[in-house]
Length: 467
Ligand SMILES: Cc1ncc(COP(=O)(O)O)c(C=O)c1O
Image (cartoon, rainbow, N blue to C red; front, side, top):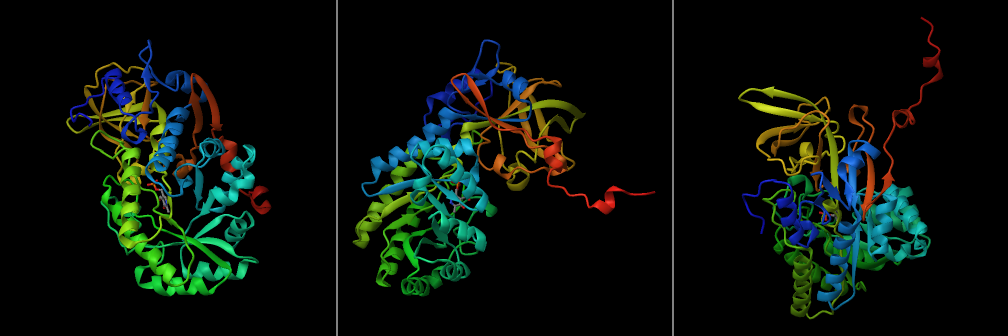
């Protein structure tokens, strides 16, 4: 358990963090330390030096933490679930060539939701010699896949997780041969998470509703180009309770029975992602191992009660696999004191590199990376640099005294930060570096001003303007 009174006195905090082994229960990556200069280091690299070398803001991804989370998912599923199983990474959390290559090298597959994510994953698989395994590794999701995206997925023999009737008909007309599909169901399960990231309740844009299941199974069983191998459901994100996923297993097992009664030969159930992580001390998610044990046991129990053979169990974590592996470093610029009201410190990024606070009111931690043992005695609000009053990264953070040029680090930014980043206010997107044992490799280049205009087209009649 995290002590409620934890104050960020640098190394004390990190020492505590390292005692916990499930990455999703930590706030900082597992390799976080404080060096003799009182600087934060991740993966053996001094954050201050990383900013000097790669610029700011900077995403810093710790390879060890990412690999540990991947292995915990993979190994605990093998340990607790006696049937076949597969972990796939929800690459919407953060998709890049290096990330996909690391994850594939850990034996994990991919959930992709667009032609772009599919392309990135295929390229990464190609570079590590696994492109011929794409058919068994890639699952294509989405509530409105375009015809060209569907064709692209068919061409690469991905399994398509079908979301709606329109897509079933589209696949029927596109496919020359039977296409491997799974059906995304909306199970009607509520969980306590932000409304925008809750997808399994009935009022959702995703999946088939329970009142359509019978009709759906019978339709699919009569259409031979639709080779249905399983059922899928995803109930939401940043979930701390185990019960919603445990309940989901029995809903899916019942649906599997019903599908079989309609003649579908299916043997796979995918319970989606959703395990939460610790962004701040008050977040208390189960560990990856505990969660996998709970869902495996629930699946075994549900199958025993129903008298059906164990299906292949699939899980597709995003956030809990990658969020904790990354921190974002910012440089402090201006500050503003409003006596008796609030003290603002502004950094060189904000809602364009981390849209979660403004979108979901998400909470984050922050530390002074170049003064880790200094006493965090001031209450400050960390503002972004965007022309938007709501562009506040963290309200009422505890920090030591700071001045312009200091480096702040916001942890747990590996999921839905870079992948949801934008060029709002024409800010170039940050670079990302992969750190491991003192080595830092650029994995995403910083955008330049040239990049910002490279897709712009100036019609000729505007470029020779005569006044
Ligand atoms: C279908 C599906 N699967 C998996 C995930 C991953 O969820 P999380 O990042 O919470 O693990 C998502 C996230 O939105 C999703 O929509």
